[in-house]
Image (cartoon, rainbow, N blue to C red):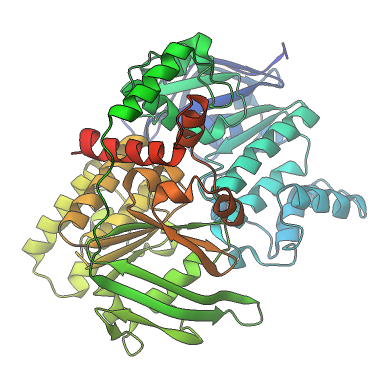
Length: 569
């Protein structure tokens, strides 16, 4: 692992359309067989760095490069993007931007066909790649028939069919359920062991990536490398918190208990964490001193779905008698494995599809006769893929669209749009075209376009996917403020941190059914629910067990209550 396959030396880059550089004096080496995590807040230069590695800069995104970037010993500016692609494979954050074929099999086979790989070797390699990512039964499906997480796996399989020097993953976990994300990290480790390739991961979900070891974490900020260190060293300090990166929950709990995090504790993962008796006692004392959380008060029912059944044409039943309630002013999470029926349920609520049986009541009245527009006046829906929602060229006009179509006075439109853009962290981009934004920024635009309408209920499909911790927190605190004013917020999410931090209750889907409706601590400490719904046990529960706390579920509940009461009053 001594040979540097990737070498930045005093590298800088400035886009032609911008007045200042995006990258400054980058010095970074990545060796064969090394696994490197690149972290940093939105706008820090992570995506630009990735585009330099895979050749999109300078061949698609024009600008001025300085310094040196060598891949496999050759300067990238002297290579074609085709030659670079023989060394670097990329899995994009937005999987829809990577599809070529009409079916999953065609898409996975695309690179092999370009290399004139003959049958049956082509079929064998496609089948192997599809099997590795769990898509062997979906090879004949069109990519747009798959869930967001399944489409992400198609992109991964399309890279895995070739042997490459560098595997570059841009937020590979963004659309995967927790168990699938865990499996993806394990798969990346396995494939690296088999191929010897260098792996570079750009990801906000730090704790999930560290399910398996990485050699280094590169922390970026303001277009520069702020730190390049081993995970134990970086997690022990304050670098992550100071730069808007969410640390693993078990480390946050240790800090609340007054435990000093040191590199020799191996804090990179809950499975490696080593605590002495004094540290364990501090955790137990903190738990004993924390008051029990207040009992959850019942709320008047706003939305009630009763015994919903639905099947897509020619396919098996997607919803099998689903019943769900949402209270007025409640913030609830809808969770479960990819393809479990969560998005289908939201489509029925919003009127995009019509159930074969069952009913949906709003304020106790059946919504069957209401049009999509009439439902939208009551329930705002933010889709998982922002590209499916955006219809205007400019950001301001996109956020203002719903108000203008409803005949709101332009003065009021401007006031509400400007306020919402500030809340969603989009104010600096208010005069930008949507096409100039990253995938995560587009996501914020779609959330803003719904929030500005002030509906009674907001249904969000993966609201924080692709968001850094600062923007994640801004969006969620805004949703909490809405909730406190009586707005019901329902989130479809794979982010277990998000669920624990903000949701009062979790509705768990599995194979078209609701298998649990309980508080979040109960869901994430129940092995049967976790397995059925492809969730992941919270590291807080594992920390409680490590420290000898008798009631791990109560420990998780008290952590959640402490966060809400003391840290987010």
